[in-house]
Image (cartoon, rainbow, N blue to C red; front, side):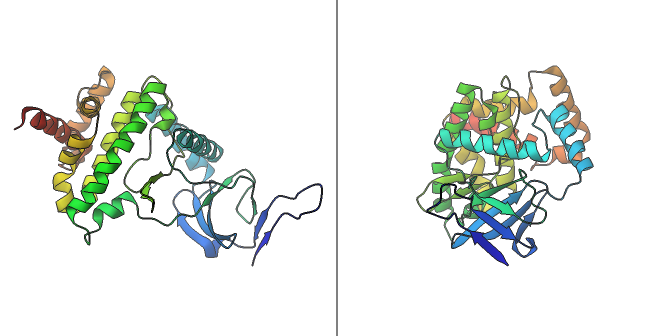
Length: 296
């Protein structure tokens, strides 16, 4: 049974709006390290994200060490993920990027929902970028028209991140699943639990994001989209030098240790040699840049 306690009027002290749930299981939307619940809220819905999710404390510590020591990312520990998500959302919103609204003034009381361990988001139902590109009821041209409109917005965020040396403006978990297309034509970005830490390496982090997006989109779309994706990206992404840098960070990393590690990765890992690998995507970008430069 769900009860919504609304603040009372006519008294000096207003009690916070509180949602009470005896059991959240009926509202489970997704379990992926966190718990996401679609819960009734103010005559509609909201999404409750509980950061104390399905991972044990030990596995969270191990993943945190991998993130912090090996990947240069922020910690995976629940309170850190919650804090980083809130920080990134505020920063992206400040720069004019649409992110979920939240309800920090609302309390949730339910089993498995610890105080200070959750965030309440607006519920938005809209197609994701990958859904749009996969929608075969639309022509390939219509799908790429949307993609061409998305590319300058993607690049604008990269411009700001480099100018301000702000790694929190890099979409660490970036791919076509974490961008929505809203009815007004704007794009909504989400999933900011972890981010890169180094201000000195923002350009490298953006290169990682570029390859990550293109790798995911190319492997997750039908042939008529795959065949044109790199060409459309190179033609309409505004900063060609940044695309070339994405190639170079994968194939010619300025740090010799990284360069050696990636050379070993390409030599000994079978998946690194596949046409669908991130190395292959980086090479395709460079080849397409050269083709468009020379008019070949």
